Length: 196
Image (cartoon, one colour):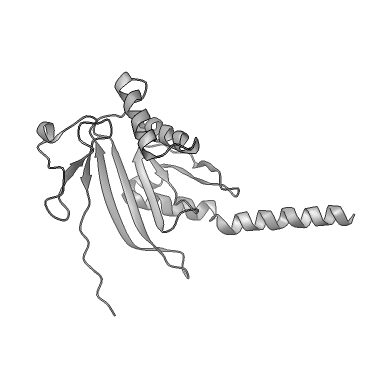
């Protein structure tokens, strides 16, 4: 009887610890969709984390967007949304990362797969990344900052007219030109908040 009670207590503690470290599904969904314009939020699909920390679908969607909840294992608050046609490409990256591949290995594998036609990145598909701070009292997200990525596989400065570095804050530029992961980066500038 004591052993059963001890096992039950250990299971309960493990369950509570997992729940303490993983935000509720509702909070994950409500914050993941912040990367999108208001009109697209209610119908977007959302991936997040269950009580065990597994990456799962938290909500199915009915529009062109897929949102990613903040990873509770990483520092800082970071969510993203991307066009549903990018899901295969993104899922392949997650799969390779889970296999223990580093950034270069993932990049090289997907480069080869895109070139061979095994993996597709639709030209002009978008990724939106939102960072911010979690208010520990209200659990609301503050100081939101957004960055936009438009995938343009194998595009170059010559084919787009864009530089490989931003000319100034907020200016568009092309990153990873000439590769499968070529994309236009747009990082809006945000005024510094006045110190109180």
